[in-house]
Image (cartoon, rainbow, N blue to C red; front, top):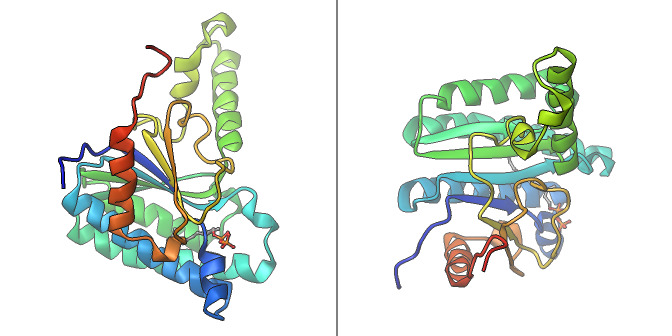
Length: 236
Ligand code: FPP
């Protein structure tokens, strides 16, 4: 295999869990469970074998609340269960976990586990993993706008001083570079409100594989394709 340049920041839309389960005559929750296992495999692989610095996973969007109540319930239970595993994983691997999105609609138990995960992994440094739960790109930009407005209201900022950098400082992933590569498996080719601000110059990679079947080889395929892209960022 020729030498691969790993992107610094990869965003992943974990899609296709429902279809994966349906193909096997299983409930959708079984697809999500398998999807959570794959997420962890990819995180551990990225930390051990790659130079990726930031991975962002789309776990639950602001629009996913429109799903049937039993699916939402089982997803929230899965998040709680899986966070315990992730906490243990961050003891063994050099991984920082951070959550992005609005926590106000999540259960106290889940929010506590999210905090514990962030605190326990906070001392690590090699790979930062953002997990998006109750996240939407528009929600994130609206949040940033509100934070900027507060600064204006408090006299810390003039309206004419507001520019891209001002908003950038309020974006949830402000400690990371923008997404270099966004991967969406399962055949869908859309962003679905994921990392709208951070994807202005992302490369996109769409793959037919369903997320629970996604492996490190699929990640390598995506990055191999990324290595062939000529990124010009609007220049020539
Ligand atoms: C989209 O597939 C997937 C989701 C809405 C849930 C993704 C969540 C996980 C993989 C678990 C992550 C675990 C933690 C701990 C954060 P879909 O259900 O829309 O699939 P379909 O399009 O085939 O129906």
